Image (cartoon, rainbow, N blue to C red; front, side, top):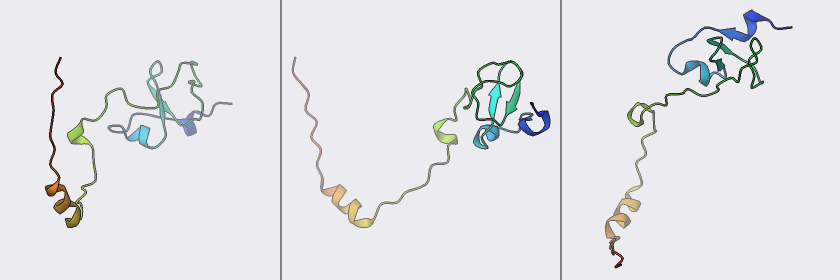
Length: 86
């Protein structure tokens, strides 16, 4: 039996529902926490990821600082670009 109160929620912020494991039904306009790929109400395919992805600047990438030894070796490397002749 389908329990409405435990499986479905309304929208809660930008992409937060997907991060918590909920899936979205485009027909019912509701989020469900289920292992199934089909909506329990209308049998429509559920969406597990947002349609609009975050832009590169909006993502939270970790800042990585390479060790000083790696930076020194990188300065020594010379890159030569050759064009292919047709």
